[in-house]
Amino acid sequence: MQDVRQKLETLIAEALRSLGKERGVPEGDLPEAFVERPRREGQGDWASNVAMQGAKIFKESPRKVAEALAERIPTGKSSGIDKIEIAGPGFINFFLSSEWGHQVLLRILEEGENYGRCDLGQGRKVQVEFVSANPTGPLHVGHGRGAVVGDVTASLLEYAGWQVEREYYINDAGLQMEILGKSTQARYFEIQGKPELAPFPENGYKGDYIYDLAREVQKEKGDSFLSLPPEESLGYFTSFAGNTVLDTIKRDLENFGVRFNVWFSEKSLYEKDMVPAMIEHLKGRNYAYDKDGAVWFRSTAFKDEKDRVLIRSNGVPTYFASDIAYHKNKYDRGFDLVIDVWGADHHGYVPRMKSAVEALGRNSEDLQILLIQFVNLLRGGEPVAMSTRSGQFETLEDVLREVGVDATRYFFLMRRCDSHLDFDLELAKTASRDNPVYYVQYAHARICSIFREARERGVEISSPEECDLHLLDSPEEQELLKQLGLFPEEVAKGAREFEAHRMVFYLYDLACAFHSFYNAHHILGEGENIRRSRLLLCRAVQMVLRNALRIVGINAPEQM
RNA sequence: GUGCCCGUAGCUCAGUUGGAUAGAGCGUUGGCCUCCGGAGCCAAAGGUCGUGGGUUCGAAUCCCCCCGGGCACGCCA
Image 1 (tube, helix red, strand yellow):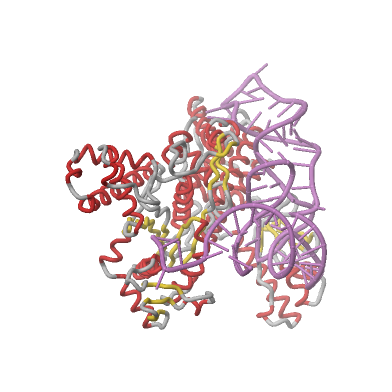
Image 2 (tube, chains in turn green, brown):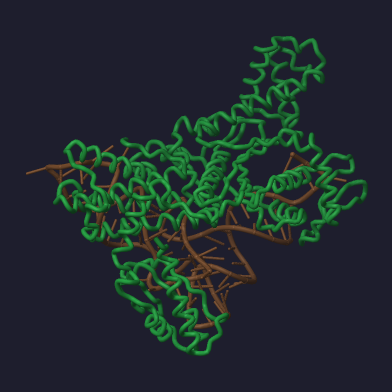
């Protein structure tokens, strides 16, 4: 079945060419044929504003242009267009025959869990790198938001025909790991009653989890480190603490339904000398040079106010340098597109990274960066402290335990990722009747319940051939069919714009259309013919709810 | 000081190739099951889209000024 949008746009384009020919307008000057969904009832199923766009070129009022175009577009049974209306300042409104709605329904039943997929990605390779929190402490709610946005963006891209890899970048090489090791070591000596042997470092990690780590070391190694000079045991503390924290992070993400294909270690960049290789690459392209004993990136070539250091004069690479090497490695692995999910506090770093990508010889569009704004954690309207030292309900683990995976994922998706999010624990948990996630899940459970009831009453589910779909002509049924038809578009749009939040808005609208339909019509109660068609409609809604819920990683319960 | 993001109903927010009478949820008010799950539905009230200019057939959307809020600006990571 041909896509409706495509079909209409083709018809409009043909009408434009025909009119252009008549009026002597060169084809290149013609406006782009474009249709959209009108907002309001009575404005048709689809509408186009080309007449307004083209008024100037055709040197005629928009309404006149619209009329001329409308005359050139066939209506009637063969085209599937019931009628065309010119409205307002010059909109061309298309009223489609009900056949289109029926075809949507048939298509859903036929394609099943593949309904909504498209080939936007054309099999190209994309990497989504997200979370990537330093393994120096447990994940907090902010990481959780990034985790969901990255995960769902990846799922959307998969659904849209991209070949997707999810990656976690482990910052295991920097100073932070050493501070983690020193913090753990200090707590270990403190527990042993010898705090003076290894003082707690400045900027050390003060969370209670450091004591837990120290106690674990004590369990494994007893007091054996007391007799060693602290310098000699530091390596053990660092790697033990790092590995243990990373295991915790992996467990939390697993519990959150987030899985990665690749865990990429920053250390491996250095072990494989990727940084020097990157420097040589940039020098060869004249984007890096030596000065004052340091190596510099020529970011002024990309409108930066000054060049930036890659290798310090003491020989140690900057974080920026390792990041460039990392991104070079991504492209070397053959990704056509790379998506980074960052905390919004890194936004100042975006232009520099994009410059680096260009300096590597790629288009800056080959790197997309999603910025995740802060999560404002509330409890009953009161802010919850977010510092890493207090242990109360700030870690992702605690939130998941209290609120559950489904509600947490849903709430993290309710806002565009680059806007602040108020996350109220009480609302997400206790207000189950006002909670949108239950509203959506309830729609699915309700449908399952209808089918259970139907089975009990011995009602058979018919095949489409046995149904008269024309009976689905009430406003609620028409609206429901319209929503079902919208799903592939929403997927495509979400994948094209990297907007994960669209999916939950769509889910909500679909659930809303279903609940209205359910209340207006007694599905199992009326005549047999209409019942058949409505059950088929329910089956389709159930399918699409499942498909959309799978993308956002939220459960579709049979009952609640 | 320089740069980026945000400002839409009482509250929390949707709303982009510029489009028709600016939309939801919560809250408020009033209705709806003898029946498939009332975790639902229907309706009402609520707006100078921060302010002022500009661009044009047309601006919440694009441009400029100002006001208010957030963030970033290192040979840190």
